[in-house]
Length: 394
Image 1 (cartoon, rainbow, N blue to C red):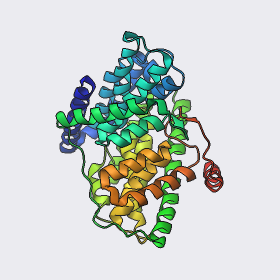
Image 2 (cartoon, helix red, strand yellow):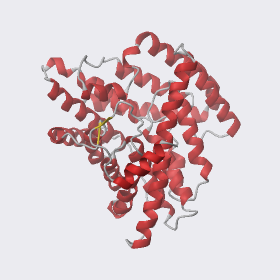
Image 3 (cartoon, one colour):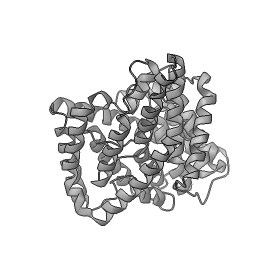
């Protein structure tokens, strides 16, 4: 309940921050200063928690020191600052880190052994992800799927589902509001729509792999070219601010929910998903805080909407497929993303979303937005593995 109280406060404060920024656009000019402050905070007080979600994944694979509690307030402050000044980031990374940091404090209190601690952290991830998006089933499976590619830790299945469902119930009690999506038209199941779905899934896989490879590469460039860590988000903030000024719009700042909603109703231009990708990569790879998931929803939905110019499937359906499939390929969590599509958009789109998520997962190779993910079972489809290798070589 304590974690969900914090989550409620986080979501409300994030909405306020976003609304305030949109009514005071001059704040975006201060993005470099906000980045410098975030960099200073983490450089001098939070070096051991800077890995964020990867630290939690590391703690599942190889439990060592308890995750410091200060991860929760630090990522909360960093994420609000990122959104307040107009960076392009999500919110799920904050929810996962807050949940993981708080949950891990019970390890010593209850004298949990390493196996029990792993289950606790998996459950925290499930609760954080499920409650932040209002998708408890997807949250539970995400917690079981995200740390180990190709395998699920079944001894944590009860705890993950219980935590995700209870967290969602608690979020509802706290009257946490989630975005609602609607698909006007869904094609009848037939051979041609299925073929079109596979083609769309390949496009989503290319997008997911490109995002994962690029954000990891740009992060490495920032670290190698700018040794003093606080200057990285300062320089990144200057570049993002200049990009906002050059484009003349804030639609690529923050979460981008209005554009995600628009992608279900109209055909968006191809540059929307590419610009959001660029803004997000620059923001997060330079050291700002938040998460990749909601920006990936934006990127996937905008790409799906744009693909409707060429693929004869309904725009809203393609947007929904891209919304989940790009994230499935970038995080290697196809089962969670299938369930998310059903929970967010309805069971009618389930088959199309499942096809897109599976194809995106198989064709995206072993790239990932989470660098500490471990390959538990290689993607063993020969055709999918072959294509994944080709993507990796791009």
